[in-house]
Amino acid sequence: MKITFSAMRLPKRGALALLVAADGKLLSSGQALDKATGGALTRAMKANDFKGKKDELLDLLAPSGLDNSRLVLVGIGDPKQLQGRDLQGIGGVIVGHLDSVGEVEAAVAVDSLGGDKKAAAASAGHLGYGARLQSYRFDRYKTKKKPDRKKPLEKLSILAEDAAAARRAFAPFDKVAAGVHLTRDLVSEPANVIYPKTLVQRARQLQKLGVKVRALGVAEMKKLGMGALLGVGQGSAHEPQLLILEWNGASASRAKAERPIAFVGKGVTFDTGGISIKPAAGMEDMKWDMGGAGVVIGLFQALAGRKAKVNAVGVCGLVENMPSGTAQRPGDIVISMSGQSVEVLNTDAEGRLVLADALWYVQEKYRPKAIVDLATLTGAIIVALGHEHAGLFSNDDELAERLTAAGKKVGEPLWRMPLGEAYDKIIDSDAADVKNVGNRSAGSITAAQFLQRFIKDDTPWAHLDIAGVTWSTKAKPTVPKGGTGFGVRLLNRLVKDHYEA
Ligand code: BES
Ligand code: MN
Ligand code: ZN
Image (cartoon, rainbow, N blue to C red; front, top):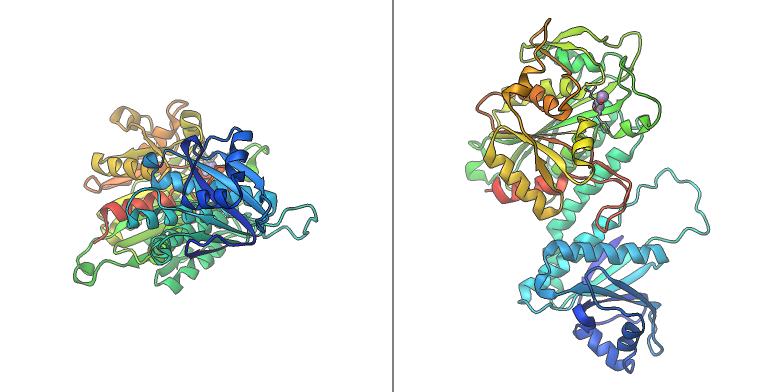
């Protein structure tokens, strides 16, 4: 979908969307149109009991005298209460609706909502952002154009009093949205298309934006002693990879001295469970078990796209977890890069093994000032938090609070879970330093405790268990069904609020 910004002149063709405040109060372009049509808008709102509540929508055939294909009134509630995120939602609602009715071209008038000029431009930018986030579809494998399938909206023109300022406000949002779309693409791709090497190939596209992209293969990882990660991958025909992304955007004066912030992603491109194999029902979902890596890659697209003034490093452990004659067995003991030995009691608890070596690697090579890892790590986090919050685990209150606040602001909420010695004990092994599963209780916490054993004490670290939020079966205004991209906006915000200089 093409999004453009232009001056506040209502176009004569295509669909037209107008914002309406609480109690059916039309904004200025709506008032003008109402007048020009002899009060048709006011009558239509009355007849349909349309009150202008936030996200309420009234679809009208354009009144006579207008050449537009249709007129859509969209409620915004009380303009004084309206946050940027609400406007994103409204943008999403508008595009979702126009898509569903088959409009190809539309304009939406974003009248000033009473604030200053800057606020008006920001509003238009937010609305465009929401429109962009809604307009994602993963349909590259649909080869048949069904005659009854509605055409998607192709052009959205956003009308604003100061179009240039609105366009400027939208630009960084558009870059972040591109990152979100990339993540959604990556998690939506099936595992015969996306496996470790092809995921690296996709990530190499970021070189165009100035991201440094490297990958280590098995030989190099063996040299580094990454026995935990390699054990997971040894049953697959696809060679594991360690993907390393670097974005050095900190302002030149500080660039050299500036320790990076690190993002580490679980990239299990398919998780069968290995020899501890999963049941058949629903196993197809495990194509998105690389969701953590998907977020890291999308995040770097966003950071590089908007030229964030930050030094960031991303490390993703990419493996396929398969059962085969070469697969690792329950009871195997592997030596991780940290030197700690791990007893693998369940080959389906593979994400933590992959992360153990990725986390150690990034600490050894980069001495990051903070680490955030993301992983579709446990089914237990879905039992605890459903699909509404991702689980947050951290050894550092400040980092945890920053993440929680960023999540609230962008609508990707986190819920902090506990860590502690009593939980840590559960994963002591009789035969090795640590075992990769606990008992039946507190499955997400013992998984996090396992990760913490690979974090040096003085490194602020947070782990996001995104198993419940990476894929959605319920469409929302800015998140269509399927891959959500949850985490890209959150971490982009974290960087923007705390790590840019
Ligand atoms: N990738 C799964 C976790 C998962 C489950 C993600 C459902 C998304 C949706 C992970 O590798 C796994 O299999 N975890 C096991 C751990 C158990 C064996 C201790 C689980 O959650 O059952
Ligand atoms: Mn698993
Ligand atoms: Zn997994």
